[in-house]
Length: 241
Image (tube, helix red, strand yellow):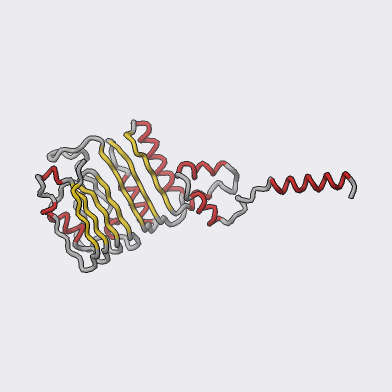
């Protein structure tokens, strides 16, 4: 082998070392890699190359965490990010998680939850904190109204509702037909609401309830009516803000 042939061989070997082997991996493996990144960084990979442009839209887990009080601009940006993810992603959702401290209107929440339910979500976690603690006679938002689809979903199995203000009463009938794990933190409730939430869940195995008993002079838990033939574990907690 002469010197010229040897040099050409070295160049070819060098080019092979620079080959983008990650991008040649199967789509499912790329999605799995992105699932370990915060959502905004997973979306940012779309600029790497045409191969990566739409990989993030197949992520099975959509998790949004805005764990600080937001200004008008940052809340609007947060809303746009969640809307974009739900409108552009094209696969079934395994887990949808939303965590936010806000004093703003939650008009989009119903749409977000409905979208996740329509995509056959299995795990749903909502942690919405109001930075202004509500008063008993004037709850800041007048109660959160969740979409009816959340109460009838046949794919939802694990539900966590950490909502630091009141929940509006769900419609009558079977509630959470496939939910096995239910973890809720709620403000003072009444007997009708607890019956709707905790007495009509045919698959429920693990129930955890935390309530702010301070508002009702420690009568909140006395209002809870829990009845389930499938329940294996029950946890009652007094949540102190």
